[in-house]
Figure 1: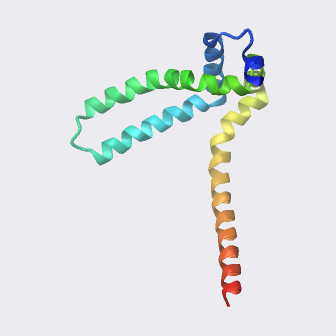
Figure 2: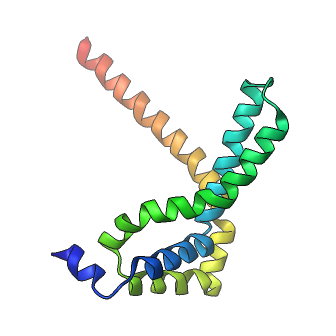
Length: 137
């Protein structure tokens, strides 16, 4: 029932266009671009015999088409949970000064959070091992 209600009156084309804008303003599109570039670099490193011009062309092609393909594939998923109005509200946040500040600082927040998360995970692992060793005695 929720799916039917959330899609009422919303064309897939309009929804996809709005979802793509959300990806642009939220920094998600840039994240996908970085992932594509990293993938191509892996191919450059692991398959040095591949014509570099070919890889340049592949990178350009995927950067130009993949986000649109991804938006089309993700539209039904987003549409199931978020209305067009929801997307527009999220976009409004990302276009606000605080939203822009968030996007600008998110790479740094993510990097530092990953370090903290790694330390936290190591501490938990050490405590679990310690408790397992105590229990085994």
